[in-house]
Length: 377
Image (cartoon, rainbow, N blue to C red; front, top):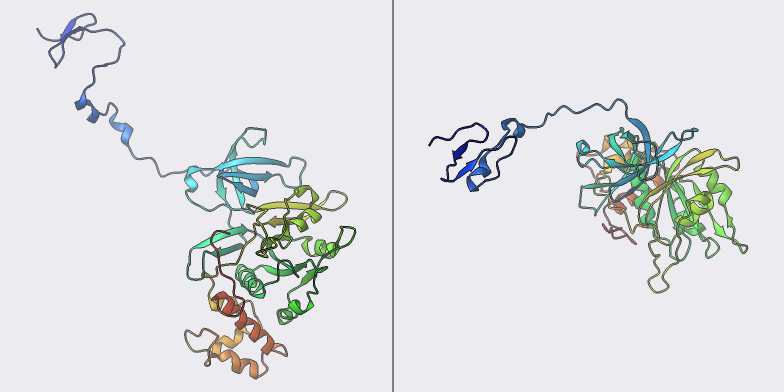
């Protein structure tokens, strides 16, 4: 008996069984041979490579990153300002997104509780502060984007200041095209003038702060003046007082603070991720941005080349024309020595050359008090 296709007729299956056919039903007697059957041949076509342009994306600023979620600020300094949480769109792949990035959002950008927008664009960055795991690793880790001022926070005591750490931060700032500023905290515990004298030739602005007997911070007005109008990132060892300064300048930040371990002389991590904050004047007008970062032991500078660092010393840079090919700028044949000796780098030429070479040695991990980079901080 031949199988028929009419509803209600009996048909013989390939397995020799007889069963009635029913209308509008799906086949249920699958076996091992059916795994290779594709009911829709077009279902396996490759995805199109054409991606939407997202011309309607809403501009935002990333203020913190936490486990794949990005807290952003839309409508900065407007009546429609709001925080929106977003997740990365798949088409961005592994594109690094960090605090300070200017991004584009689509989807639910209302900022209402339990809503999630989609982050689909990352704008070109004006600056990037970065470091590597160690000095031999060229793989870079971006810390913050679009900042224009690097504030190196160092305690005068408890923990003791480490000049080579400051040198490394200076190299990172010059490489990123950022203005470096030194802030010395805890000047009530020790006199920081000897420490600062080692950086005079670099003309790096400095602010000294101290805790007064009534608990107020001396030097806070000078610090606010340096931060006003800038997009600053604070960098320093744990325990030097970065979070304390942030709380003083931007009380709404409410950053957790900690004490220095009496045995190791090192601070305890109280900030686990970079977070951006605005600070305001007494009338509520925004004055600038501060990004607080977790404490670090050092900057790996494997991505910085000697020629890149020399560009941060405009009085010395023309002397590179007299250097042999491949010059490291820290050798006997370096043309910078003759350039400085001829007085072409100005009255501070020798002091600046000495400082430049000190930074070169800090970049390579050489020299006294060189900090050991740690990829975990």
